[in-house]
Length: 237
Image (tube, helix red, strand yellow):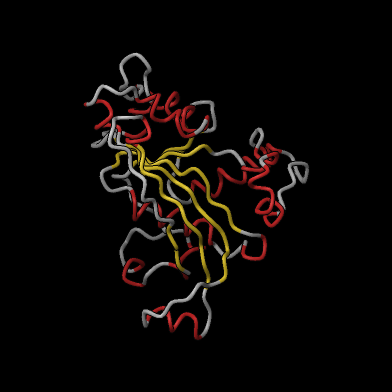
């Protein structure tokens, strides 16, 4: 399994809200047999697309130093990131809310890694790819962050998600059907899996958080995708 990242070449020099948010996105690709061998020899060709991911590194400290409102930074991306802000921060002081401090303990850095979306295509589900993708995002991109946060709400039930024409082809491949089972069941199932990665619910907006000083658990479902050198550490579950 490989994570192939999109490249962003456009950067704003002026201090606009977008300038404090670094996008992280790409696709999950699977290789088998000779394709996997070629990848290690530096001859990697495109593999089979099994899913995609999207996250944002939010430089909270820099925005506050520059006097840019943190809500404006997070609201720029989506309504979900705005809800994450409202759950984590006091809008009057831009400091973490007391219940967040109590749950997370000491937060060394205020920067946030927000995981916006991880989607695995139907033929590749049940292999631990979704959990492995999220685990790798936390491990690879949370340096300098005190909190990893996400909106734990199934994508197929998000308002307007299925009416986006730009996403129609991908949605068909994903087989999204908001009427396939109750939203409550889908929500509980998602939370169950996220807790395996150390995420905990906070507030009443469906937000879940992970404090970077905490151990980064390695669920058994993703052992096959994790380097052996990492599995030898005592953090595995």
